[in-house]
Length: 129
Image 1 (cartoon, rainbow, N blue to C red):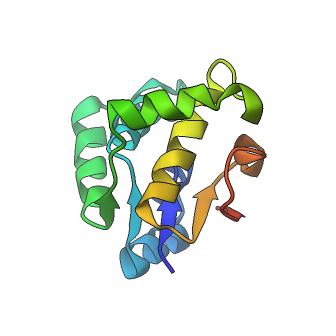
Image 2: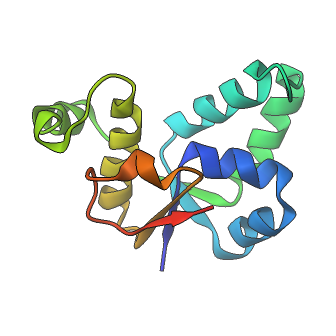
């Protein structure tokens, strides 16, 4: 079963050896935008801030264990048309677009640090990282 990794799970894999091993052994899937989200988390958090060049190297390493599914502008526009019925507002749109990409990729589940982010916006099972 293919697992879709949202950016929070990928950031956790940076500091959690067992999660990193899982990613490396199973391969995961995500959308390319997750790479920018990981970079923001690694370089912008005042408690764990790391240098941008180090973050880029870490992300490059993670990406070798990932397949990528992009969603097109028409697919995003279609998703936005259904946002209200799914309760999507504000920043939650980013989680919703991860869910759209996960479904498009054929993933069997979504791996995240916060299962509540995906409540009501996907038919896929959501697993806690």
